[in-house]
Amino acid sequence: MAWRKQQSQDRFFQQAKKEGYRARSAYKLLEINDKFHLIRPGDKILDLGAAPGSWSQVAAKLGKAPKIVAVDIQPIEPLPGVQTIQGDITKEETIAKIADALPEGADLVLSDIARAASGIRFADHARSIQLAQAALEIARRFLKPNGAFVVKVFQGEDLRDFVEETKRWFETVKVFRPQASRQESDEHFVVCQRPRKETSK
Image 1 (cartoon, rainbow, N blue to C red):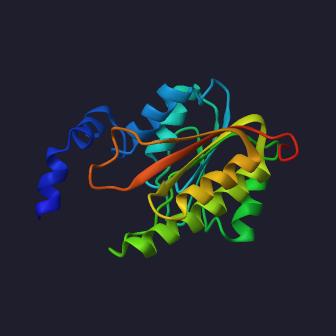
Image 2 (cartoon, rainbow, N blue to C red):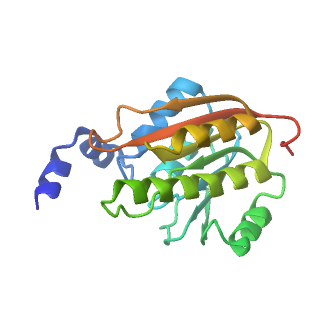
Protein backbone atom coordinates (compact mmCIF):
# COMPACT_ATOMS: atom_id res chain seq x y z
CA MET A 1 0.00 0.00 0.00
CA ALA A 2 2.97 2.32 0.59
CA TRP A 3 3.77 2.48 -3.12
CA ARG A 4 0.16 3.45 -3.87
CA LYS A 5 0.40 6.34 -1.43
CA GLN A 6 3.75 7.40 -2.88
CA GLN A 7 2.36 7.26 -6.42
CA SER A 8 -0.70 9.29 -5.50
CA GLN A 9 1.62 12.01 -4.17
CA ASP A 10 3.87 11.96 -7.25
CA ARG A 11 3.42 15.23 -9.15
CA PHE A 12 4.04 13.62 -12.54
CA PHE A 13 1.46 10.93 -11.80
CA GLN A 14 -1.06 13.58 -10.83
CA GLN A 15 -0.20 15.70 -13.87
CA ALA A 16 -0.62 12.71 -16.19
CA LYS A 17 -4.10 12.07 -14.81
CA LYS A 18 -5.02 15.72 -15.21
CA GLU A 19 -3.69 16.03 -18.78
CA GLY A 20 -5.00 12.68 -20.01
CA TYR A 21 -1.74 10.78 -20.45
CA ARG A 22 -1.86 7.07 -19.74
CA ALA A 23 1.33 7.11 -17.63
CA ARG A 24 3.71 9.55 -15.97
CA SER A 25 6.42 8.38 -18.40
CA ALA A 26 4.94 10.83 -20.93
CA TYR A 27 6.88 13.59 -19.21
CA LYS A 28 10.17 11.81 -19.74
CA LEU A 29 9.66 11.94 -23.50
CA LEU A 30 8.45 15.54 -23.31
CA GLU A 31 11.70 16.46 -21.51
CA ILE A 32 13.81 14.51 -23.99
CA ASN A 33 12.09 16.19 -26.90
CA ASP A 34 12.43 19.66 -25.34
CA LYS A 35 16.18 19.14 -25.11
CA PHE A 36 16.89 17.35 -28.39
CA HIS A 37 13.99 18.44 -30.68
CA LEU A 38 13.40 14.96 -32.09
CA ILE A 39 9.68 14.93 -32.98
CA ARG A 40 8.80 16.87 -36.12
CA PRO A 41 5.45 17.36 -37.83
CA GLY A 42 4.72 14.49 -40.20
CA ASP A 43 7.40 12.15 -38.85
CA LYS A 44 6.94 8.41 -39.09
CA ILE A 45 7.58 7.13 -35.57
CA LEU A 46 8.18 3.62 -34.23
CA ASP A 47 7.47 3.26 -30.49
CA LEU A 48 8.93 0.07 -28.97
CA GLY A 49 7.78 -1.13 -25.56
CA ALA A 50 4.88 1.25 -26.00
CA ALA A 51 2.31 -0.03 -23.47
CA PRO A 52 0.28 1.56 -22.03
CA GLY A 53 0.79 4.17 -24.75
CA SER A 54 1.90 7.43 -23.13
CA TRP A 55 4.91 7.93 -25.43
CA SER A 56 2.69 7.35 -28.47
CA GLN A 57 0.29 9.94 -27.06
CA VAL A 58 3.14 12.48 -26.84
CA ALA A 59 4.34 11.61 -30.34
CA ALA A 60 0.83 12.02 -31.75
CA LYS A 61 0.38 15.37 -30.02
CA LEU A 62 3.73 16.86 -30.99
CA GLY A 63 3.97 15.26 -34.43
CA LYS A 64 0.59 16.56 -35.58
CA ALA A 65 -0.92 13.33 -36.93
CA PRO A 66 2.24 11.53 -37.98
CA LYS A 67 2.39 7.81 -38.75
CA ILE A 68 2.93 6.09 -35.42
CA VAL A 69 3.45 2.37 -34.95
CA ALA A 70 3.40 1.19 -31.33
CA VAL A 71 4.78 -2.23 -30.43
CA ASP A 72 4.64 -4.12 -27.15
CA ILE A 73 4.54 -7.70 -25.95
CA GLN A 74 1.45 -6.67 -23.96
CA PRO A 75 -1.77 -5.49 -25.64
CA ILE A 76 -2.18 -1.73 -26.07
CA GLU A 77 -5.60 -0.12 -25.82
CA PRO A 78 -6.37 1.64 -29.13
CA LEU A 79 -5.15 5.22 -29.55
CA PRO A 80 -6.30 7.65 -32.25
CA GLY A 81 -3.85 7.76 -35.13
CA VAL A 82 -1.68 4.96 -33.74
CA GLN A 83 -1.26 1.51 -35.27
CA THR A 84 -0.52 -1.12 -32.63
CA ILE A 85 1.38 -4.38 -32.94
CA GLN A 86 1.44 -6.97 -30.14
CA GLY A 87 4.67 -8.92 -30.27
CA ASP A 88 8.18 -9.52 -28.97
CA ILE A 89 10.75 -7.25 -30.67
CA THR A 90 13.35 -10.01 -30.49
CA LYS A 91 11.20 -12.23 -32.76
CA GLU A 92 11.43 -12.05 -36.54
CA GLU A 93 7.65 -12.29 -36.96
CA THR A 94 7.27 -9.04 -34.99
CA ILE A 95 9.96 -7.33 -37.06
CA ALA A 96 8.16 -8.47 -40.22
CA LYS A 97 4.96 -6.81 -38.98
CA ILE A 98 6.91 -3.60 -38.36
CA ALA A 99 8.27 -3.77 -41.90
CA ASP A 100 4.73 -4.12 -43.27
CA ALA A 101 3.56 -1.14 -41.21
CA LEU A 102 6.55 1.07 -42.09
CA PRO A 103 7.65 0.04 -45.60
CA GLU A 104 9.48 3.37 -46.09
CA GLY A 105 11.17 3.28 -42.69
CA ALA A 106 10.92 5.55 -39.66
CA ASP A 107 12.16 9.04 -38.86
CA LEU A 108 12.31 8.30 -35.14
CA VAL A 109 12.58 5.06 -33.16
CA LEU A 110 11.69 5.23 -29.46
CA SER A 111 12.29 2.49 -26.91
CA ASP A 112 11.10 2.71 -23.32
CA ILE A 113 11.21 -1.06 -22.90
CA ALA A 114 11.87 -2.50 -19.46
CA ARG A 115 11.09 -5.93 -18.11
CA ALA A 116 9.66 -6.18 -14.62
CA ALA A 117 12.40 -5.55 -12.08
CA SER A 118 13.69 -8.62 -10.26
CA GLY A 119 15.28 -6.63 -7.46
CA ILE A 120 18.68 -8.01 -8.46
CA ARG A 121 20.49 -4.96 -9.81
CA PHE A 122 23.03 -6.82 -11.94
CA ALA A 123 20.36 -9.01 -13.56
CA ASP A 124 18.05 -6.05 -14.21
CA HIS A 125 20.90 -4.11 -15.81
CA ALA A 126 21.89 -7.06 -18.01
CA ARG A 127 18.28 -7.49 -19.21
CA SER A 128 17.99 -3.78 -19.95
CA ILE A 129 21.14 -3.93 -22.10
CA GLN A 130 19.82 -6.97 -23.99
CA LEU A 131 16.57 -5.14 -24.77
CA ALA A 132 18.44 -1.97 -25.70
CA GLN A 133 20.58 -3.96 -28.13
CA ALA A 134 17.46 -5.48 -29.70
CA ALA A 135 15.98 -2.00 -30.08
CA LEU A 136 19.24 -0.76 -31.60
CA GLU A 137 19.12 -3.50 -34.24
CA ILE A 138 15.58 -2.46 -35.15
CA ALA A 139 16.61 1.21 -35.30
CA ARG A 140 19.50 0.38 -37.61
CA ARG A 141 17.14 -1.56 -39.84
CA PHE A 142 14.32 0.98 -40.09
CA LEU A 143 15.72 4.47 -39.54
CA LYS A 144 15.85 6.90 -42.43
CA PRO A 145 18.83 9.21 -43.02
CA ASN A 146 18.85 12.05 -40.47
CA GLY A 147 16.66 9.96 -38.18
CA ALA A 148 17.00 9.55 -34.42
CA PHE A 149 16.83 6.78 -31.83
CA VAL A 150 16.03 7.03 -28.11
CA VAL A 151 16.48 4.01 -25.86
CA LYS A 152 16.16 3.41 -22.12
CA VAL A 153 18.98 1.67 -20.27
CA PHE A 154 19.82 1.20 -16.61
CA GLN A 155 23.03 2.30 -14.95
CA GLY A 156 25.61 -0.47 -14.71
CA GLU A 157 28.91 -1.81 -15.91
CA ASP A 158 27.74 -2.45 -19.50
CA LEU A 159 26.25 0.99 -20.07
CA ARG A 160 29.51 2.51 -21.32
CA ASP A 161 30.05 -0.34 -23.79
CA PHE A 162 26.50 0.05 -25.10
CA VAL A 163 26.99 3.79 -25.59
CA GLU A 164 30.23 3.11 -27.47
CA GLU A 165 28.33 0.64 -29.66
CA THR A 166 25.73 3.26 -30.55
CA LYS A 167 28.54 5.66 -31.50
CA ARG A 168 29.56 3.21 -34.23
CA TRP A 169 26.18 3.73 -35.89
CA PHE A 170 25.27 7.34 -35.09
CA GLU A 171 27.09 10.63 -35.50
CA THR A 172 25.79 12.12 -32.23
CA VAL A 173 25.11 10.19 -29.01
CA LYS A 174 24.14 11.69 -25.65
CA VAL A 175 23.10 10.10 -22.35
CA PHE A 176 20.27 11.96 -20.62
CA ARG A 177 18.33 11.50 -17.39
CA PRO A 178 14.98 13.34 -17.30
CA GLN A 179 13.79 15.01 -14.12
CA ALA A 180 10.63 12.94 -14.49
CA SER A 181 12.58 9.73 -13.83
CA ARG A 182 11.81 8.42 -10.37
CA GLN A 183 14.51 9.28 -7.84
CA GLU A 184 15.01 5.63 -6.94
CA SER A 185 15.38 4.55 -10.59
CA ASP A 186 18.75 3.94 -12.28
CA GLU A 187 17.29 4.58 -15.72
CA HIS A 188 18.98 6.74 -18.33
CA PHE A 189 18.12 7.43 -21.96
CA VAL A 190 20.63 7.18 -24.79
CA VAL A 191 19.72 9.71 -27.48
CA CYS A 192 21.24 8.92 -30.88
CA GLN A 193 20.97 11.23 -33.89
CA ARG A 194 21.95 11.06 -37.55
CA PRO A 195 22.68 7.45 -38.56
CA ARG A 196 26.06 7.06 -40.18
CA LYS A 197 25.74 6.69 -43.94
CA GLU A 198 26.65 3.03 -44.09
CA THR A 199 23.74 2.14 -41.75
CA SER A 200 20.93 4.38 -42.99
CA LYS A 201 18.26 3.28 -45.44
